[in-house]
Amino acid sequence: MSAEMNETEMRSALEQMGRKAREGALEIANVTGEVKNSWLAAMADAVENSAEELIRANAADMENGAVKGLSPAMLDRLKLDTGRIRAMADGLRHVITLPDPVGEKLSVVTRPNGIRIEKVSVPIGVIGFIYESRPNVTVDAAGLCLKAGNAVILRGGSEAIHSNRAIADCILRAGMGKGMPEGAIQFVPWTTHAAVSMLLKMDSWIDLIIPRGGERLIRAVVEQSTIPVIKHYKGVCHLYVDSEADFDMALKIIRNGKCQRPGVCNALETVLIHEKIAPEFVPRLAEVFKAGGVRAHGSEAYCRLDPEAVPGTEAELSEEYLSLDISVRLVASVKDAVAHINRYGSGHSDCIVTENPVTADYFLGHVDSATVYWNASTRFTDGGEFGMGAEIGISTDKLHARGPMGLKELTSYKYRIYGNGQIRS
Image (tube, rainbow, N blue to C red; front, side, top):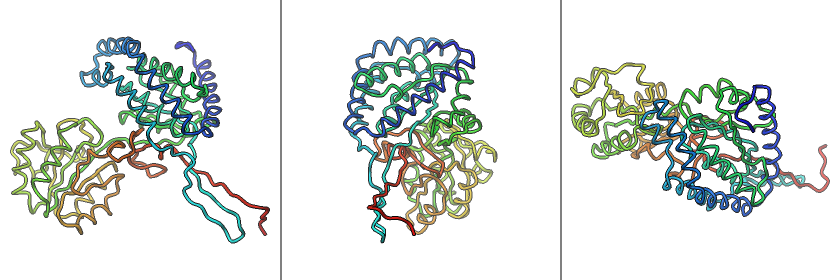
């Protein structure tokens, strides 16, 4: 399809993609895991064998990105090299090793009248995946959706259009060469916002939208979509240092949560400290911050104990810094810490450091977040770290998935009822 179309032609082309995806999804839902794995294996080989072609396509995006003034960090996320391409192929091969989530019997009930009711996991159907920046996400999303028996329509960001199109063409050719339906994986080739707006209204064909990117993208998707959306807006992750915390442990976890990769959604953005231990703990924390280049945005009480800190504002308490900045506040109790987190947090990942199991249990039970930690870094909120293998994203929703989303979260379920002539009286 041409990359230059008027909106009427584009809408018609997207509708055709939706129709193909629905047909493909119905077919994929009933193939065996072995067949799906054969498609994924062919894709992995094709990605690895097409490294030179993919790097050439990526060079155009890198050149355009430099002209547009993308930051060094954004250019690094965009860049493909042989190592990253090999990692994409290995990612597909890893998905092959994961258990097929389709067809699992979730429950079986035999009623007094003899009918047997089985609750069985099934694919969701057609997934629209809208994402930014990283070209490897094209492969990750396609592989996970396919393994879970879904068709997927991919729409990447304009900054990676050449890379994403080349990757999509590569895996599509490979899969179809092994018998994969034509509508199983499709790529939207237009970078205009109009294409996204149209896609988000295709509720006749698409069952679920998953956006992956910055808060601005995700909010735009939610505002426009007539299709259910699974998402998280941002990761305002907290760590509470309790009055009975092990100081060394707390400092180690804070350092890891803030300094290892400050630009990711499971990095720490706020530290809460019990006021009872603050005079002893804050000077040690200030040393950790200084060594790591972290700037603390503190309350007045905190700033009195850490002369390097800058005054913080209430607005910053809801901010995802994605940098070596962090908010710090003193609290009077675990209940105050929980109240703060539930007010200012994003429902992503929050941690308590304490040696008191009763206090920890209160925190874990009362913080309303997708993942809650006791004496462990929030940086573990990740599908791979949770043993899911790969993930398609992280959800702070409560329906139908929450936390890291792996293969099982890309399925729904249906009821199969078996009888021998029963009728309802």
